[in-house]
Image (cartoon, rainbow, N blue to C red; front, side, top):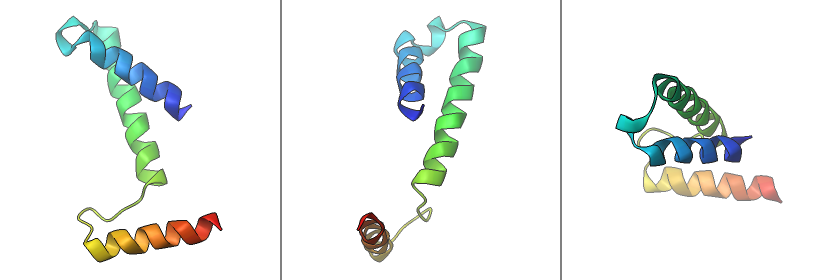
Length: 66
């Protein structure tokens, strides 16, 4: 579902903002918001991570994969 949303987003963006219909503009906003929400849940990170924060995140992620 995520990848399909990304494809749809790319298709809409490739048209250019000035070429989008009103319906497409609304759909672009919906798809963008949905992707952002999913990414915020799937890739949680501090707003301004330090180098140590990034290493800790990667370390914890690696442990979860084992």
